[in-house]
Length: 82
Image 1 (cartoon, one colour):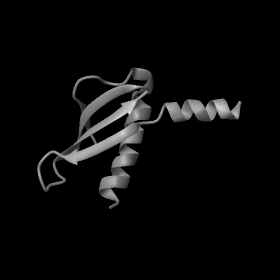
Image 2: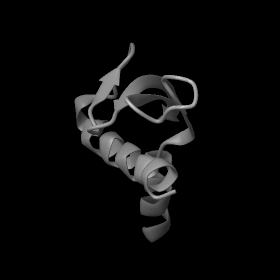
Image 3: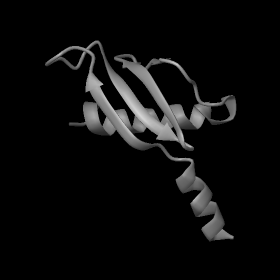
Image 4: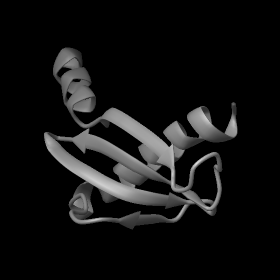
């Protein structure tokens, strides 16, 4: 039972997460982010205040809060804590 729960949690994580500044040699005003979630590709702009502007597709309403939380954690780790 625990293994199934861990597998479901792993499937519901972002993968192949990448980010890059919107402008060369600058971290502000934001970053272009790209990732896969549940097999779907997403692109968005992550603004300096944490707002996420989705480029095309948006994760489902059921997953949106989890995806946004994971994006914030990744950006804190890669951008703000470095």
